[in-house]
Length: 336
Ligand SMILES: Cc1cc2nc3c(=O)[nH]c(=O)nc-3n(C[C@H](O)[C@H](O)[C@H](O)COP(=O)(O)OP(=O)(O)OC[C@H]3O[C@@H](n4cnc5c(N)ncnc54)[C@H](O)[C@@H]3O)c2cc1C
Image (cartoon, rainbow, N blue to C red):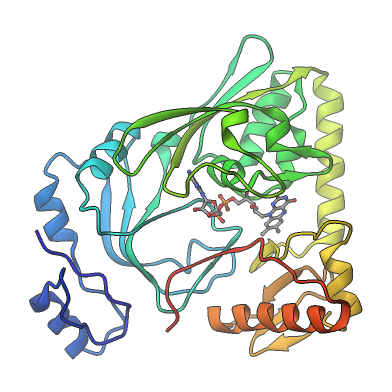
């Protein structure tokens, strides 16, 4: 089979994977879209059970509410379905996995290849003996925090303040208010690009600050967490305190959370503030007035506005303090 992965909105160039007929129709109509390769993929994978959509807008999934479409958007039914697709998808097709999109800029030109979003089949959460919680990776962090609270398991309340999925928490070593994924993870399970099941111990994960060392091709499907004995009332009070602090200090709308990692010995927000960037604007994107390490989409920003604003902040901070800020937010796709 031959497939094509050009950037959305650009004329399709003849290349090794070209499906010329489908592309010509799309581009002649002037629609911002990739060549539709879903029929060919379905034909190649007759046992596929999940949903495969062409040119699905990603803006509606990402917290920033910006960005172009996924050439192919795939929601696997379960781990077996995901493994089947990974095994049978031509190796030249790029793959990206997304969670809740709370740490993500999807560029305006969209994402060539297949974007995978895990759904209901990856949402289970169970409490196990020894103060442990096992969860799928599509579930929101807060659901794991609540399950632990209800079972009087302490140590996982910090997850109630992070608006992503457990998959995103594993990839980002998500943490807040003194807790971090690396402190509580026993092991994670995932699939590689060939669909093979792999298990990673905490040490295998190669965690560091907002980073996981496991190859980018791995799609995490399950996690096992270790908590400790606690009291439901105390954990509930801790979660309420986290909620109050968050609401007072962070924008919760059309943002991607902390934009830059804290450089060793510095706070990113302070460097941004000192460089005079609080409230700085590019188009409809703005550095938050409430928290200067957050960028926000005022309404109608493009991904290019947001990314340009971030790069402008990086330049100003470097000029002012000599410190080079590193993006914490992940950026995927191509520019329009
Ligand atoms: C208001 C706000 C507050 C925030 N506060 C915090 C905070 O306190 N602490 C913190 O750590 N973060 C915070 N964040 C950032 C964000 O919530 C975390 O990074 C979160 O872990 C991202 O999860 P996600 O599901 O949204 O991932 P996405 O944003 O969708 O993706 C982020 C990365 O995770 C990868 N990924 C997602 N799912 C999987 C999977 N199943 N397997 C492999 N890789 C996967 C993606 O490929 C991508 O590289 C905040 C964000 C917002 C908007």
